Length: 377
Image 1 (spheres, rainbow, N blue to C red):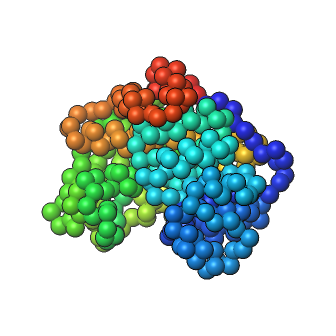
Image 2: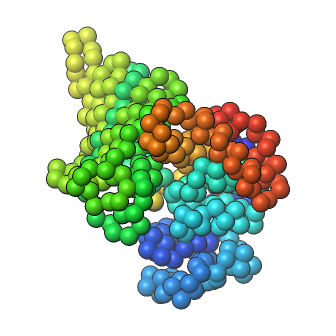
Image 3: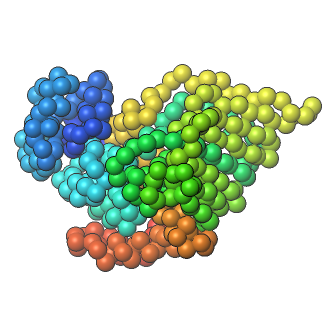
């Protein structure tokens, strides 16, 4: 990706406008209000009464409320925007903010489709602003330990995730065609990229619905990804398997040329490696430092604005995680192995055809190949 604008004063308190005051919006608002180097100066929601109620409930004062970023930005001196709207609103809200000159931290998914996310990546390039998604399940201290442990077992060739839980959400998830793949699987798919330090090239996926499932769509799946370095990542999951449930982060196992490492999704990982006398336990020590989940995402976003270093959830990188989801769905629908590059190129054509802004459309056309542009960016 190209360089992005940083804070005029790296030591200053970051003044933010938050968009979205619903359930997750209140979680973010509470985090922002409790973060020492952040000040909330604006809150945007189509329901201004809801926004005022959230501020009152959390005892946050001095905040301008409005129904759009443009409206609120006219009355405040802000540095950045936090987008906590529903996914369908992510593209228009983020585009508005970027072209107003704001870097954006967005809740996942950064946009509902790869095509819309390509549009946002191009908009970030045109405006020179940072766009990052809060891929919050990357931010666990024990996951960082697991990643360091993988570096002790040689070249990793096999990585697996088992995910078995049984939530009864009600609402839209119960009616989705692929609830597990579309609404949840992006988290482990993204973590697999984080752990392997590489991007996937293809996937074969089978998705189905167990006979006892309370979902209308497929609540169980197995997907096998091939990565650029030849590693295989296998995800097996179910959203309707009660009893002996895994962590919501899943249960992980990595096999490398020099040993094996496991992580139960919560506690410190375990490892065993080869030495001159055979197998020996491996340890990287506990990691007591670092913020977790959305607090970790916020901290990395702020650090990037201060230093200019690209965060792990930067839009160009995160596109590969989104493409993993769309490719897995396409494979499940067709019964065929799907190349990630094919998903990206089809999405680029769709993004160009649907783009309303001439400057963003021109940027998209200049890429030539989405896969090559993202890999080289």
